[in-house]
Image 1: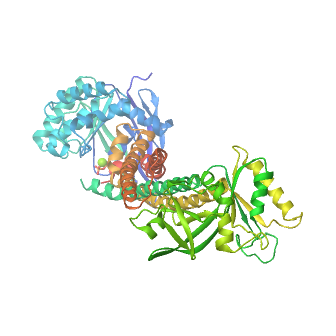
Image 2: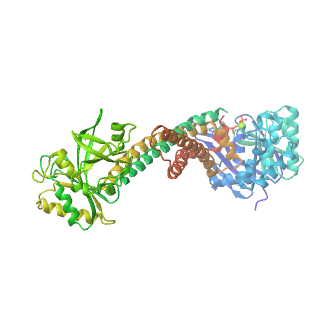
Length: 232
Length: 394
Ligand SMILES: Nc1ncnc2c1ncn2[C@@H]1O[C@H](COP(=O)(O)OP(=O)(O)OP(=O)(O)O)[C@@H](O)[C@H]1O
Ligand SMILES: [Mg+2]
């Protein structure tokens, strides 16, 4: 097995929807180890979300290989990808993406439902995840009854409840004020200390500064790969 | 939630469809039971022998119009057919009956004493005429209960004398109430000995030929087929009918009549069932439509569910279950409504609509099936969505 949790090998992603094909990723190679904290930066349209979709197994490379914990994603079918997402990946979105008709607890339990976990186990684990994020007294609230910061914490609880190896966050603080954003970033730091690999996309240099590694993307290529605290 | 209102409206199609299925099957079943009851009330092991235009003759006069069956035929059947238990010849005619100022036009049914046992139709008060009165051509009569009411009102008709076409008859009995039976009001009849009828009312004698309108035959238990065979052979022999010639009489058994009744009510049920079926299909399409709208509206939700690990079948079953829940809840409301309608109809009409357990089970599974069938297409559409596209939708 590879020493890397995430390994992209000359990955291309081409969209063929328009008149001419769009090469959103053009030969990206990237290696990320267990419990790293990576921020991906770049201008709009540079391919960050495309990269995140690939890393999260929502998508497959048009060319090249993606190894996640040693398994090649390129050759997996939809249901296998769904299972990998369920077991290995947690997603945090800019717009939280909670299901509005469900309580916080039910939202957090959802990944466990798809994992086939027993009901008592589900409730126990979801309650624990919410408590860890300081939402012990908000479990029965609907998303519409929670503040933005609280909703994002519910979303983070949902993303970590099934103990993923990596957590992907596309602009997780984009919809939050700077104070709440700091709290969320602190949470990510804590999660990396517990062994989860966090990869986040941000425009904000201050947010990116929390990470221990910054990958800069432009026109579908990696422009820079800076590691803090490590002499290259 | 406005979704709830929308779902309820959609499900209305199923509710109405299932309610009609239940009501209509109930009516059909009730009609069939009623028909069977009527046929049963004719008596048991009955064979009707009627004069009949032969099927080979070019000019058909319709059944019962020819005068080929005679009183002697009925006696011969009784004497010569071992499978026959008893016979009752009938000659009936519509005549005026009178008591004092009151009169009524009624059916005078001239027959033999055996009639009561064969038709299982007996006097409620007084008695039926007997063999002695038959032999003596006695002027006695038994009134059906409608006739008794028409002529006597509150008075007791027993031991009174009435006029039938100007001839005096003693009233010796009043029949039990029987009701209508295939367009014949069994209670609007006067029974007299057939011998008296021939001599006093119909002006028929052995010389002119004593014809009968029909012969009722009761076969021995389990021997009605044998009895039919024997009667047919005997009558062909007596009427000199040989091979290519058609019969001038016809035999009908109780089971023939029952089958005819059942096929009529069967067609009735089928027709009504088809109507209900159409409204169910329309209801099903309504559910499919609302599910398609729901899939479109909830594309984002589907994307989120897929992102956190929902597989194809998990999304599929979520939407199929939703569709099925809708159609089944519509079905249950429809069943309740249908049972209510059937009961309401039963109290309004004088015969019962019968809701069977089978029709309830059928309705339940039909509504379940509709949910599955019409839910599967929208559900597949949801399950096949690309998670990235779904997530990006608003
Ligand atoms: N589904 C798609 N079909 C066609 N082209 C696409 C599709 N998704 C992305 N693209 C194109 O790929 C390129 C990269 O898009 P991507 O969403 O990855 O950018 P981004 O870095 O996330 O931008 P932003 O910061 O605005 O979110 C863009 O040129 C975009 O137009
Ligand atoms: Mg983006």
